[in-house]
Structures are given as structure tokens and as C-alpha cells.
Image (cartoon, rainbow, N blue to C red; front, side, top):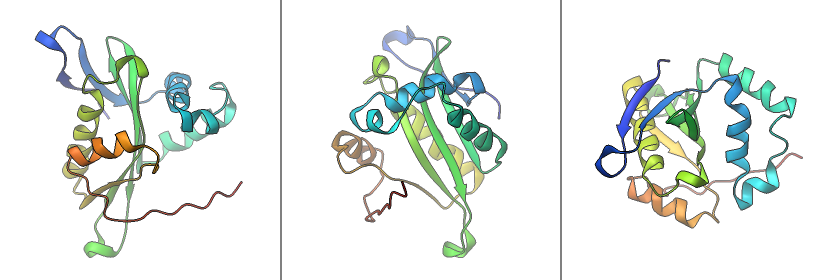
Amino acid sequence: MQETDIAHLGPGDREPSLILRQARKDDVPVIVAMLADDPLGATREGDPGDERYLAAFERIDANPYDELIVAEQGGTVVGTMQLTYLAGLSRLGAERCQIEAVRVAASTRGRGLGREMIKWAVDRARARGCAMVQLTSDKSRTDAHRFYDSLGFTASHEGYKLALS
């Protein structure tokens, strides 16, 4: 995947361009820090240097149906998300895109970066020929629900999870 300059954000274009690109191994610690930087993530995540994160990164990076994406602005990683492309028999065998682990760095929230990231992901899925983009959001994340609603997503299904540890 090539780096893609997707938007010039900020008043009068004074902020640097937002670039979305494939994550690299050296991005893993900052990605993990963003995942841990909220009340839910703080209970789930560990030391960003934990070798299990690097093993997971290697597996994601090697899979052609997974894309770990970072948003970079002014040389600093300010956002992340994972796109997974799922094959299925429903909808005439259509592929769907699952968006997971969307985070924007606390220092840059409220500037429209998350909106640009999700729009880019939807456009990427559309260009790939996906029939649907789907995501889940914890029930406690009411701000996130409003955000996804504003982008045209609908809460059409009830999601279930079973923790195995």
C-alpha cells in the first residue's frame, strides 16, 4: 500500500496534511499507547513493548486481508485503525470490510481526523468492491455512536461477545 495524502485540515490549511499509510513495526508502541488511552483500553492493554503486540503486528502485516493503518500528521502518528476484509456467502458472496480499533490521539481529537479516517476507509472498501462496511462500538461509547451515526452508519444489529480468558 502506498502512502496516501488525504486531507489538508485546519483553519486556513495551517495544519500539516494528514497521511494514511500502512503501519510499520516501529509504529506499534504508539498504536498500543493510543489503544490504552481511554477508560476501556486502560483495562485491556499492557506494556507497549510486550512481544505479543509485535507478534500480532507480524501476523496482521503478513495477511493480505488485514490492513493496520496509521494516520500521520507532521511526522507524528495521530490515529490508527485496522481494516479486515471478510469473505462470505451472504449477499451473493460479497466481501465486507470490518473496521476495528479506531483511535485518534487525545492531543488531536476534535479536529476532524477521525471523520477523514473513516471516510477514507469507506472509500477504500468501496474501491475494493466490498458490499458493506461494518464496525462495532462498545455500548458505553455514546460519543462514538453519535460520531458513526453522523457518518451514515446505522446501529442495525445487536453485537455479542464472549471473553475467553
